[in-house]
Length: 255
Length: 312
Image 1: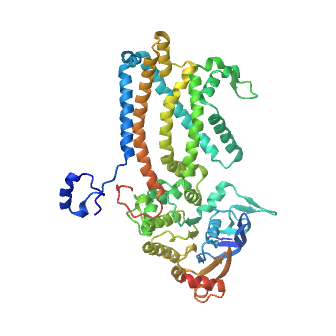
Image 2: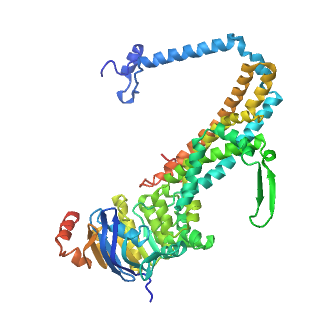
Image 3: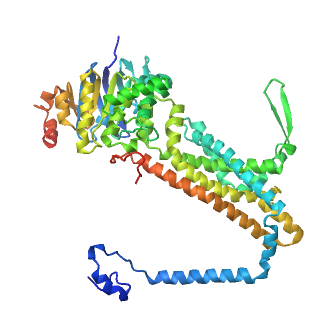
């Protein structure tokens, strides 16, 4: 079975001590599907994405990314942790874009984009550099390869971060509130890059407060609150004609 | 305009009237405390200078005579060598201990903690004497491969000369302190950096050498410079082992000539000169790395700065 570009979850649960951050989440993301996750702060959007990237460990439930159990192998009685190399391999196929960019400040934009291919996949530097330059051009940053992160604006940094994630040729891209740390006039340039990516058939899960983006680009909109999915469906339904009272209340405030 | 603000010099008040008010400088008041402080400062400095010149027990001629004596310079050379060796070995070992301390494997972490606790918790002077007398504890050690009969016995007493004990003692002690400094550097690296590295699938090793260590440097390097300045003076402790470093060299001379004070002044002057000489590059390093750090840590959206621009 080829599950590239899919995310599948059943009964995903995660607690911090007594506090339930994810309470039984189910996901069925198909290859090439764009899922926008909306909801108030602390609703579990970020935690869900971080679990799918393996940055957080789920407590219970099934989580398969690209058709494989993430970080663990299922046995008759338990999930056994995979060895580090396998986990790293799985992660190379999932791209993550963080709210705070998290570019490596000791590397130039080009070196940031090259970091994955060179340091993880062992790609030759020369090939990786020219690939990095074309990726930077794709996100509208040709000529910025030699700039360090501190020389770039927030929007430029985030576009470098997207190029860095794409350099690993992931099958799934996760965006954790990618425009929340940006100046309002820089939001558009990042969203434009993401729209372009969506148009090329990349599977994307996007936690966002940008309702316009969700309406325009998403195949599915998930509204989360209190660690559970309250409502999900096509954007016309969830955003245009929400059924749940909680969703209506949230949308009244943000729209 | 209130008459008591800014008008310190009444004779110039006419001129001030002619000046455009928007160009006038803002002058600040000097409290009476500042004048008192200056008076005390002058008195203390004057008193010190007076006694330095008039008290003949300082024997400045003897200071001059021995300042560049071959024995003293030889001692100075050894002090410098000891400092460098202790910092190099201490740095390498400190890095290893710091990495162990940051390990997720509990026993490895405990081992490193134990090392740091022991070497920071006991006086370095005691440690030095301990290493010098280690032969009393282990008179012979055999270096070899277990269960094979291949083995080479080593006489510890012959091996552990005063200088060896000094280098071992200073290095092991310094390693514990540097390990803590390096650990602090690791802790200063933003958690998001580690997540970004994990997200790309980097191995622990790649993460350490390509992401964590380069970013820890701005914190670690200036602190290590300070440790080096401290170590330069700390080497004087090994004089108790009879190692002929700077202090011991002066002691050897005054044991013979009874000119204790002038020779100690010679030692002090050399320590002071070397410390000042080390402080200058240290301040440059601090300045440079604080610049790097401000760039590194200001990941929050800042306006683009042209290449070669000044970081604020």
